[in-house]
Image (cartoon, rainbow over all chains, first blue to last red; front, side, top):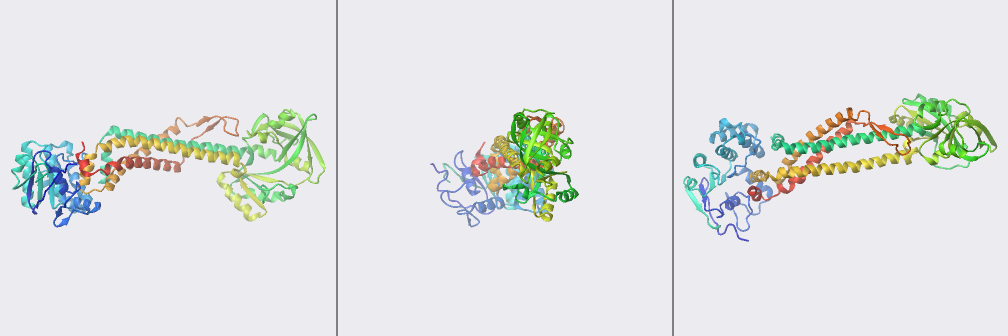
Length: 203
Length: 401
């Protein structure tokens, strides 16, 4: 068995905006998945604000993923049967947030990504860029400590990808949200002040 | 939102949803109709048992049915007119039939055959025991010297309607007595043992023959089977030397065994239908769930547990189950009120020698059961299909195509 990552040791400060860069198969997605508690770690540990990820129960992992981490994927993963507004609201319901606060957060998130007037549209009625914005709104509405975005612009054209990156930059600068993006696209890398290069699983 | 999501997810692939709906609909509709059919058959059996031989039940002295006595008349019922009046005053009691059973020798002058006689109130029994199968002649009603013979007995005696038969019997005092009767008809019940020995004459003639004013038993005819409890309570509280036995116990071999057998058969067929429905839904739902692996991965990545994913799919399964079951019930009711309105013609059942129509007797409790069954099978099938995918590692689910 070949390890996907080896000798990776890094510290990411709160409020950072970082790009994991490297060619396909270098371990970018694996590292993001480990940071997001999606993949198990065979050796080593991850600390989030001092809390170790080792020896967490399944229920504790679910809680961290639900409350403290926001995910954005290359292929959006929106519910096709729900409207943009409902997509953003769904995980807030799961978080147990009360109706009033939920509505406020949904509106704020949609406004932040410029989709306040498109709330009633379903994903299939939207462009790729709009769908990715809904995915971002969904992640930021949770108000997580960190957002992990795996190749968020890979399915989009350059201009749309640039728009998405500008949203990330604004979020990072205005809200101080820690954002870790994986991409091999130089355009994406041009937006992030810090880069972590990965090659053959080594940082 | 979860319920809204469940219902909307059903519309993702209308063709697949329709297939699942049809499966649940046919399953619950079939169970509903089959349950009604079973109830119809059981009611026919019950009516046949009640209206051919036993009535809704019988009253004897306590312990009489369980034992064989050397002098049975010492255990017969004496003051039965008072009992008859009391029984007829009870709500739901429509008929009271005093009876006397005895052993005797029958002869046509050439052949002697032993038989078991029943002294009955021919006129009133003729009105109630309408399913006794008289294959030749007429039922015993108001002919004072009439005798109704079982098929086998008539054959042994080689007699037909209008022939004369002499019945010889011992009186309760031990002396020999005899009387001549005219054959009014020949009957059969489907039970050869019974038809080979039993004959019926008027009760006063039987009492004269046995030289007694006693009767052996009282059969009771009711408005409805549910009225039996009242008869039983009255006998137990007011006539402590007597006991009441319902027809299901009196005719355990034919009626109760048939009911038990049909119940078991219904249970087996129900299991087969449920298994077919579960398999049918499972295949279709599995395909749909496999196509949603990435969505499952996304949900899990955002904190949903495998159990929450399973719950979401069960929600969808229950939703489709409820709709399918409701449609199934509606279709079953429509079929029953149109195509099956006059029932289903059935071949002779055990103990009956004629064809009969079984009406599909659909009752609310059956509808509830079929409805629950439809929803439950859909939920189980969905659970089976969802359980494996929900427990996939999150990374694998997200990476799946």
